[in-house]
Amino acid sequence: MDPYYWGPHFFGWMWILPAVFLIVCLVFLFSFFFRGSGCWGGRHRHRHDNAESARDILDKRYAKGEIAKDQYEEMKRVLGEK
Image: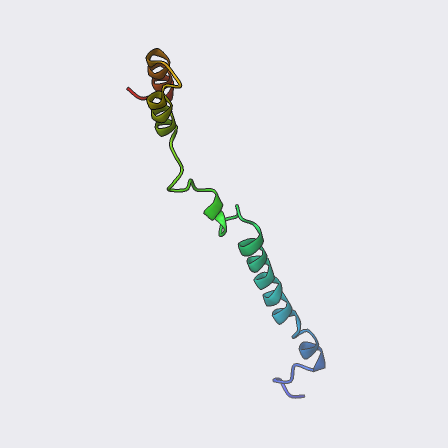
């Protein structure tokens, strides 16, 4: 008997390695493209650069005359600014 002969049963299981590799690739692609808030697709979690801060909105409302000076000062205090 040849010690290097693995027999026909070894090659019967050779399809498992490509199948596992394909499943891992599909899971990666699914999580990358379809889960926007996932580890790789987290680009939607960050604040956009063109978004206004609360202080900007408050300053604009005060400049338009929508709020009074005392309200403006109180809201600034609540936001944690001087």
